[in-house]
Length: 242
Image (cartoon, rainbow, N blue to C red; front, side, top):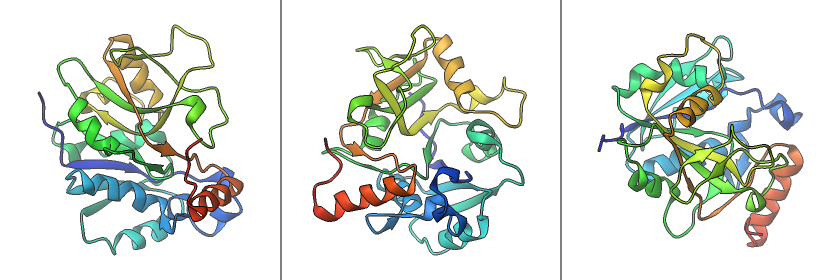
C-alpha cells in the first residue's frame, strides 16, 4: 500500500462570513473552542498521528493566521497565501508540489471534532488502501452532527464506498473535516478556482470514493450562536454528544 505523505494540507483561507461580526476582527480559524483556536485543534490532531509539516492556505486577515502559526514548534508550517480565494479544490491544487506525489491528509481549520477511544485520523491511516481508494473521507451520521443544518452530504455502503449522485437528499452522512486524497486526482481539473466537490465526484464515478464514520462528537461552528453553544457545552462538561 502507498505510504501517506508526512505533509498535510490545512484549509484556513475562508472569509467566515456567517461568523460575522466576530470575524470582522479575527478570522474564523482563530476563534476559540474549548479555549483553543480551531486551527490548533486541527494541527494538534495531525501532530498526534506523526505529521511533520502542514501547508496552511491563507487569504482573509492572513497576517493574523501567519503570526499565530509562527509560535508553533511541534511541526513545520508553510504558508500558501492566496491573492484571490481558490476555493477548497483550488487551494489544495495550488499546494500539490509539497506532497511529493504521495496521498495526504487535508483538514478544514474551522470544524472542530472530539475523538472517541481511537483518534479518527489514526483510524483513517489504518483504513487507507491505495489499491482501491482515491479518496477517503471522515463522515458523521447527519442526525448526530451538532450544528449542521443541511440535508447531509453522502451515503455510505457497508464496505465503506461513498456515493450521492444516484440519490436525492437528505443524505445519512455529513462530511466532517478530514480527508485523505491522492494528488493525481487534481491533474485533470483545468481550473484554478474550484470546489473539492469536483474531486469527490470524479472519485465516486470510478467507485473509488470511500469513507469511515467518526466515532466521537463534533460541532459545526458556523455562526456566533453556534460558537457560544459549543463552548457552553464544553464548559459544563456535557460535551457534544446527543
